[in-house]
Image (cartoon, rainbow, N blue to C red; front, side):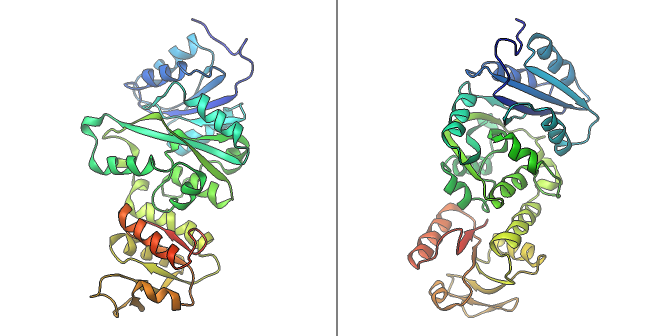
Amino acid sequence: MDLSMRGLGMPLVSILLPAFDAEATIDACLRSIQRQREARWECIVVEDGSSDGTLGRARSFAERDARFRVVTTPHRGLVEALNVGLDHCRAPLVARMDADDLMHRARLCEQLAALDEGADLAAVGSHVRLFPRRTLRDGWRVYERWLNRIDSPSRVRAEAFVECPVAHPTLVIRREILAALGYRDRGWPEDYDLVLRLLAAGHEVGVVPRRLLAWRDRPARLTRTADRYGLDRFAACKAAFLATHFLAGRDAYVLWGYGATGRAIRRALLAHGKRPSHIVEVHPGRIGQMIHGAPVVPPDALRRLPERRIVASVAGEKPRREIREWLGGMGFQETRDFVCAA
């Protein structure tokens, strides 16, 4: 069937879809887009110089359905492909999508409704279901559970320095805001960088608490293979935004936790001239020690410390929940007085 925007009017949403060597998955992806209950979309497929049959598959869809538009580029990587595609998006909203994922039929309907109802929202994501389940590693299952508990702009902001609090392929963003920010390569994950810049600029990011994206896990995914997705690069990304926003104008902060995550955050913040004045620990064997010039103190000591900015850096949801309860009970307010960073 030959479909076009004629009769549908201008698109309400542009789907931004970079594709590289995605021949095995792109057909299913594009079919899931065609099945959307909201039909007033355009899909910009940025074919990033693939070495397989991705371009032919994308063009075959575009020949039959004029809502698909294929843009070709030499292989320059994901960030460049996203920016090229963004230049071709015409609608007031931009929905991200990856060529190996699948949309729930209601995705666009529900996310566009959320943005229509929430005029204060710059973007909205959704919950996800990772697949294939049989090969899914435990770490990804933990991340999926954590991600799918985030259900409001306040939770997005509170969890922003733990991990990326919204899956990038689920985002629908107001185009004028996305165009002003663009995508950039800073040597760390471009999706996390975008979310943190949205929040740093004062924008609100919402979440539709339904699993509207089937998010494919595969051995060759960039989060497993690209250097910018290494744990040290995540720490560098978090530290850059902590230093210029939460810790702006301060050389010192209080670090709660000195396990592997706490040490990584301390090192990353040190690159920005930020040093812990004190380190909070609950282990009695550490209290009273000095670590890199910072005395180790128990949580109760926080009431007496002049420094009021706390970075709580521990692994695991249960310890973070306990720290939040402890700090809240002492009158500290999350995102104002303390942040959790993993």
